[in-house]
Image 1 (cartoon, helix red, strand yellow):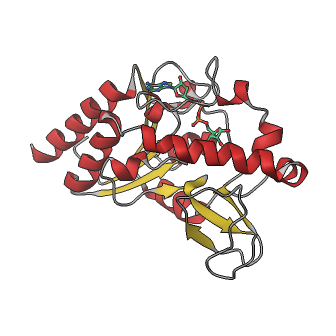
Image 2: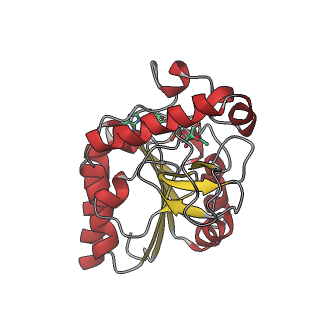
Length: 236
Ligand code: OAD
């Protein structure tokens, strides 16, 4: 780890599991409770906007009942104390990285606490409900939708993410099943560019074989331990 200058960290639902937020693909997870086609596609939204707006209103409201955990806090400590460059990319739409102290978080799948106007296409910070069809604060049209990237839509800031992956020394994937592209492909992109790759996940993911190192266990333990190693190696 001596030459570690640039790190890209990708997080998924598993990092928020110990905070009490359901993951997607576990037994009883979100995609067993709801059909992806109904609540996470533009077609589902066109078919039944009330259902979709209500689903995300419920998930946004649930954020008030959860707290960041040790894994979120450890990544905030890494950002504050690592002397090199860190890019934290999350597939999560919750705000637990920010509440855990991270200042720069790239939400590639959008955010529950943001609304996207289908009329003016602007994004606005949003804490309230959307199912009551409030007006867009920018253009006043009653056309707000959740600012969440649905299947078939382009994730945010891909150019910036790929640029960081091309240059990083280490790519770390935390709490993600490796089932959804493009994020699932980041490990191979990083490896192709010469980076070391590390998976921290409760269990082997679909992409485990692609990583140079894998550690399995709860993020609340693995992430603080790994961050400690990185910061210790930088000091010595
Ligand atoms: P998944 O639900 O697919 O995967 C969560 C991963 O976290 C699994 O591999 C679990 O084993 C692991 N996990 C569970 N608890 C953990 C813990 N305490 N510590 C560490 N790991 C744990 O969630 P994502 O990979 O984030 O996209 O899903 C990717 C995308 O699929 C989501 O962003 C969402 C979803 O459909 C969209 O909605 C566009």
